Image (cartoon, rainbow, N blue to C red):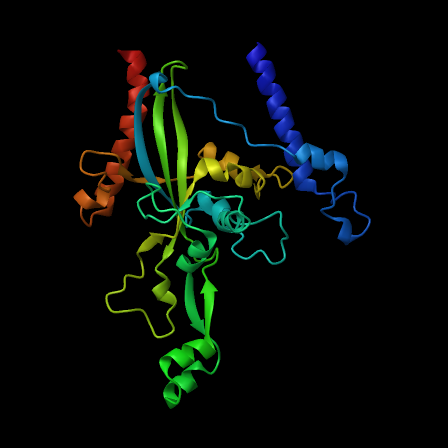
Length: 310
């Protein structure tokens, strides 16, 4: 009974907070400039930290499996993580997940950013390194004429006409996540803990004005960087997803990801073969790769069921 009461209080608090954030003084504004201005009570109500994870003793973990998954942003259920791809007229309240992560890194609120593509969090990156990894060199008008005339050297042309252009939310069409499923014997249930998230985009050579290099695979996607998810929760808790069913009830990115409100496909699990990916042992057969992903999901799901059937 006590647990139910605490849950009800939590839900009411969450509901009140989301309503305050969604309205942003819209119904009380006398002029358009007052939209988004919050009073002291609203600011205090919005000052909420993400719900902290409970402590899990290693002795309470009876079984665990770490998996890597792909979230395809071309699927309708995953649209909230992609849109708005351009937010010029939507203000600060509505931003894509990539914009939220990049701003958090730029402002120093997200510090645990890593560059290794496999998601093992070994090669730590600074904001400058992240910006370099996601940027390509573009050229101003007049570049082609200067190049054809041959008066300037390539170094001089790049110095005079070259500009650094970072990738945007429109270019990020997939996310990869790393997490661990574990059976908590103290609680007697299977749980999931999200560990890392990585935005993925095509190789930046795709935007090369001179054309991509020979053998370039335009369908290949690469992680731009990996973020240690627990370090990003504060930032993700302050950014909200547009709710298509009720615009007065936005949902925080932190809540969306922790509650697994997305569709994902497993592309790798920890295994004895150096954590090889599914496509490393099932070649060029998308259907069989998808079935293997479902098999791994079944192993995780069936373990909890078997705990009570045996």
